[in-house]
Figure 1 (tube, rainbow, N blue to C red):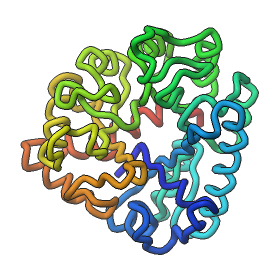
Figure 2 (cartoon, rainbow, N blue to C red):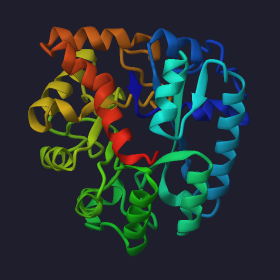
Figure 3 (cartoon, helix red, strand yellow):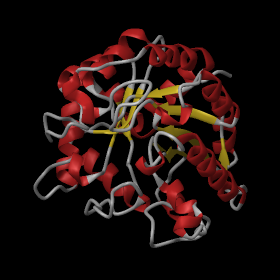
Length: 315
C-alpha cells in the first residue's frame, strides 16, 4: 500500500519529545510496528512548515525537520529506508522494508529561490506541496481563493524546474485558479496528496468535479484523506468516506484514486474505524463491499501512485 501523506515528522521533533518511531507509540497514528501491521509499503512523509515560522524562518524550520527526519530514520534503517528513485523503491520493497518518500508541505521553504529547490532535491526531497492554505511566493492557497490569484512568475519557474528535475508536484491546499494554472503548465502528472470530493463534502480543501476532470486529463492521482472535516460535516465515518471513493471513481475514473491518509495531521479528530495506520484493512473491506473489483482496489492502494512515481522521478 502507498500512503501519499502523513504529518508524523512532527512527532520526531524535540518539541514532541523525539519519540521512538521504531516502537508503538499511542501519542501518534503512525509508527513502524503499526505501518507493518497496516501493510504499508511506501509512506510519504511531509515536512509541514507551521504558520509561526512563515515567512522569515520557513527554510530554517524545513531544515530542522529534515534533520529530525533523517535522525529518526537511522534508528530503524533495517526495516525502513528513504528512497529517491523508482528503482530504489522496488529494491527496498523486495528486501522486505518500507520505502519512505520525503516531501515538503508549503513552498515558503524555498524563500523565492530555485537554488533552494535544487538543494532540497539533493537532500532527498522528491515531492513539494506548492502551498499550504495561505498565499506564498509560488501561488495562492485555498484561504485566498476569493482573490482569484494563480501561479506567480516565480511559481511558473518552480513548475518547470520540478518537471525537469523529476520532483512530484502536489496540488493539495491550492486555490482553484492556482490549481488550473499548474495543470495548464506542467508536462508531468501531478498529485493531490490529501483531499476528497467537494460534491460529497463542501469544504474548500476538497476538489470540485471540474478539478477532478482536469486531474484525470493530466494523468494525476488524488489521495483520499481520512480527516473527518473533509469527509462530512455531520457524523463522518468510513461509509461516508467510501462515498467519496465512489464519486471520484465515477467522475475521474478508477485510475486516478489513491490513499493520502493525513494521519497525525488531524488535530485529534480521528475517523472512527480508521483510527490509525494499522486499521487500513477495514478500508479494503469497505471498498470490496461497495463493489470495487480486486484489481481496482490494487490500483487504489498501489498502482496509481506508483504510475505517477515511475513517470515523474528520474532514474
